[in-house]
Length: 283
Image (tube, rainbow, N blue to C red; front, side, top):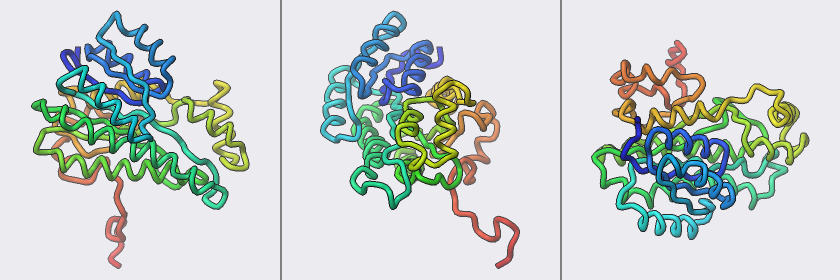
């Protein structure tokens, strides 16, 4: 088993992607501490997985600092160390053009996706540093270009990517790897948020796509693809890779070790400003 004798904390474990990661981590031998907003879903997941591994649960909204602090008080009482932290909690936040958006609600995605990721990592670090090596897995999103009517979401996820790169350098001396997963368009609760927002706020393309995914007619990405990548990033197979954003659907990540030196000495799998010379221009 790839994660035997490891202890993993997964936030957003009551969601589609987080629960998929919990299931595959359990199969790979990891002891689990699961957090999410739905206590009912956490209890069901605990019941499902307890025959395979140790499963502790703690409901938490990572967008609330006091709840994150309570979560880590709980974690410290459960284990003396952490080997893996997966920050899978996420939200679209306010959907609509910036002009349409309520200014206060626009910050919802920033609170959950960015602040929640940063706070969970911050409070996990004393436990992660007790290992010879540990893994932090964050979540990117929003595709590779502009995502009209989702400025709250893409702003938060863009910030998570820069946070991931920065923490990778900060924590390199502790041999803690920090990498992000781009999971692709998974049919999760976020699709329901788009449907609820309506076509006027989400836009015709995103709204129709969400309707198709919600009805099972679309081409949604399986959450198990993100879960498989999470196992790889948490295992010894990915050792040496840090500060990168890996796609669960586009990248042949199993081949990365063969090219690790080139990847780590370049901006491959990073978001970067493209300069004229990068496209063959001399100006």
